[in-house]
Image (cartoon, rainbow, N blue to C red; front, side):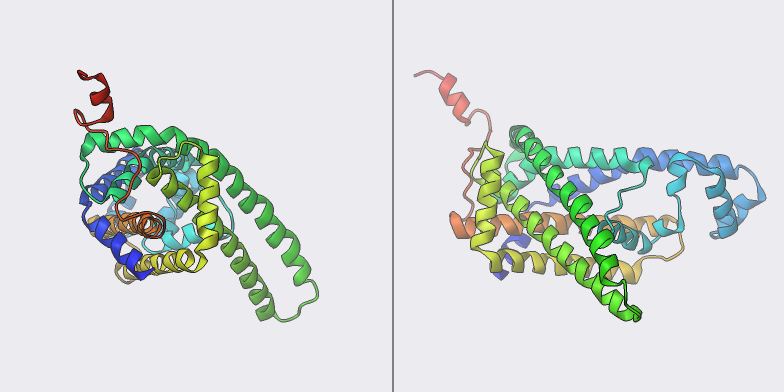
Length: 329
């Protein structure tokens, strides 16, 4: 487990372009909404006296006035988007199974589609643990994108069942029954905390199965995503301590990044410094995301294959199998 974590960390360290590419993709996807919101703020402020007050520091009176009059993406410009409050809002949304605000849904969908496209190349590069070139990277993206889209259909169905059916049963039906005759608020809190633990365990197990299904799909060049999902389930079942332990260590790394951001994030500022700190946080979040994939790949390769093993050959002209097939006998 620890070996896989350290191995994954070194793999990410040796692939800086993956970090830069994912950070840039996140920035570019957010840019259209940012420009739209910038235009709405500029139009609302104009040359009014409020503009000077906002330039000198946040004015919550003006902020409330703007929210009362705006529409669309402007409705997302709430105090909770500043600093660490944005992280808490996102975590609360996951725990309570609430989706993103409607104006940003298309950005979330675009991010998911882009992540699905890039995932094959990312896992292929991390599994090989050596530079493969842009051509081979995007070739791997093209090879696996339709396979992962098929897997996404299954994952959407499973997560919808968890976050709609199971979450609703736990918190809308079971929880009210548990607290019907309670008079101590603290007991009700612990009941709800216990239900969050149960729901979190189900989500964790599901995440692990799908994570190792993706790893096995790339490392073993699997075409059947049902077969990859079954193989991922078997790997988690046979290695519960290692898979859960590694997930826990990676999660602690993510918590450390969150804590560092909590210490330095401005609580009520929207200036260049706040933007720079936010971008640094996103870079470290990308690193942790890659660390999850790299360490899980390293764990699988260490348990069921030799280090660096990937079934699919690197698609690099003129050394690819296709070049040999078309060459002279």
